[in-house]
Amino acid sequence: MNVPRRPVTVVVPIYDDLPGLERCIVALRDGVDFDVDRVLLSNDAGPNADLIERRVLELIDGHDGFSYVRNERNLGFVGNCNRAVLEVDTTGNDVLLLNSDTVPAPGFVEEMAAVLASDEMIGVVCARSDNATIASLPFSRRNPSANVSPARTKQVHAAVRDLLPRATPAPVAMGFCFLTRRSLIERFGLFDEVFSPGYGEENDYCLRINEHGYTSVFANRALVIHTGSTSFSGDRGPTLRLAHERILLERYPFYGGALALFQSRFRDAVDVFADTFLPNDGVVRVALHLPTVVDANTVARVSAVLAGAPEDVVVTLIVTRQQLRAARAAFPGAKVAAGVRSRQVYDVGIALGPVTTFDALTALNASAPRWVLVDAIAPLTRWSLAVAHHRSTALDRIIRRYEDRTVPWRGASDLVRVVRSAAEEPIDAERLRARWTAVTDIAEATGLMVHPASVSMRRLAALAFGARNPRLTARLRSIAGRGV
Image (tube, rainbow, N blue to C red; front, side):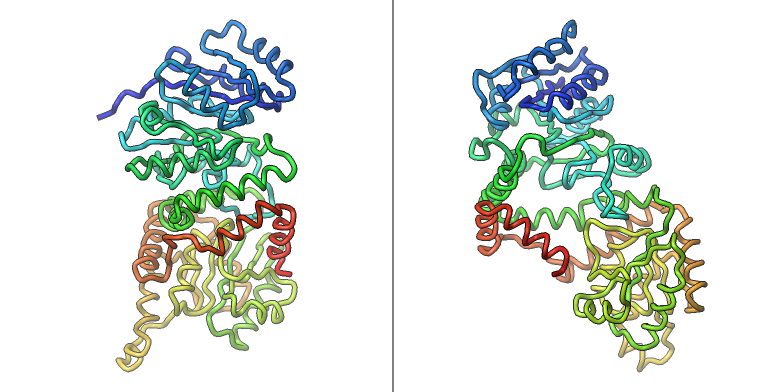
């Protein structure tokens, strides 16, 4: 039974960035149903408060669905939100906090409110966006070196929104577009002032109400473009992020494990590989997984593939950390990655030789929506061999349920042809979802994938150091990222 959704007050905290605010107000004017919902603009007395006030009043003149308030002094983001919601807004509506540097798509309030109404234990809903950490779409990219543009996010969202579930549960929702129930605010309060002036306050709220059974979800059909990071300049932003992350982990030691569990199991497989549903750069991106044992024959085959791949077939070699140095020496100039990074996906994953470990299967599962197997395990007719290799053949049976092509090695040019053919095939969303879930469940059930339930003292100490030395921390992370 469909439950009627409640009316919503959209609260827009204002500090600075007048051009972004103008775009936001225009989008709200055009995209909110003011017969049901309201908009409250709260000016937090920033450096250009008078200029912003004049322009805001011009933009909302004659629009009865808007109201405007100005704080006597700057309260910071957390204080501004708390005052607007707890003191100024007396409607009793549910509350949608919306950053002023956003451009929401029409109908976003209706969709988010409908998701909130769909289950009484949903406590928070946020939209999808081009810039919203774990709520970003696409989150994992075919080419991580390329920035995700709003136009690209809109294209990908249009391609996958109807393939995704209407809502996806997540440990936390993102504060840029944050809808919650008025009843929960009355029961639990809103943002803890310890997170003032900002960063981490919405995560604390989500985890606080989750301790009482309320969940946070992404509304996969609602889209809000977000500029992001316009409030805190210089070292202040990194300092606040690191210091407040430490508070979160002290309060909720399982938080890091929850984020990892979300990435591995709760994020829908279509979401994981969203960027591959609509390739836009004219190339086929390939993850070539090397076997555990790399012999001279394997080196020759890999070298042939790298030499024979045309410019529009980009190959990355996927190896274990133990193989990394040897692979870079054997294949100079090649793209080499140790395992699969959570923010990168490929169009096609190739298993070059038998997959004999579950770690290798997990890496293959996370790399691409399509699999090509080369010289997979041959059927074993002798019982002595079957007993000796029963684990490998069990893995092979799992792989064969979901592979797209199984071929013998016939040379590099033939493999390139097979890869092109596989990349042209539409992705079967249900089959992909079944594969992703099956491999992940086995990995977690057998203890091969473990999500920590507590935070280490080392992690807390690193966050404390980073908060005191944000520039040095950024420098060290940059060096570590380059592998220097």
